[in-house]
Image 1 (tube, rainbow, N blue to C red):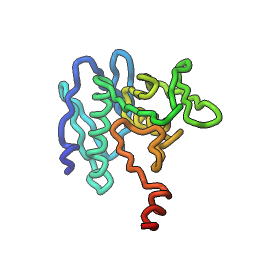
Image 2: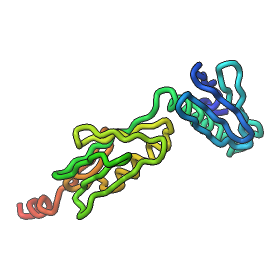
Image 3: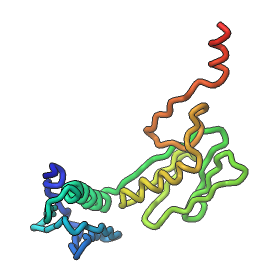
Image 4: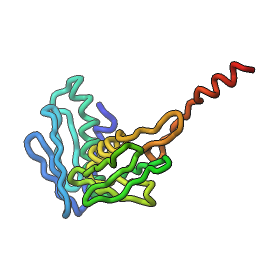
Length: 184
């Protein structure tokens, strides 16, 4: 039995939860999120709590028990608080500016990189150096941040590129450091 899967999920008053056949939908006043549910997992609602149970015990359904509970809890948290990921752009001449609904990145290429976010994602620019990706869907926020980071990942020699705010990039010594040690 999953320890996480057996914990009940509390539903806030401002959300409406609809449990359908094979899916669950959580609605707020502004957004709606839907999550498919495996046939071996059952979600039931009692008052203002959701309980996730395993219908047919198997190795796969035991693995999906905690996952399903976490995905539903993330939907509720996303609609109440939201999720954010902050990216930092480091490098001489590297910058980000808004362009319509999306952003334009200058990352040292011969052309600017234009990125339009998927629906439900909000991009906020701070100081032409920080980019805040926010939204209600935790997966979509993380995937959008990863897609933006993919345009110019951090260089391991100079440290230039797009990185997460709390990401630690270990810099490698260059070729000069190796030859200087051999001469001694």
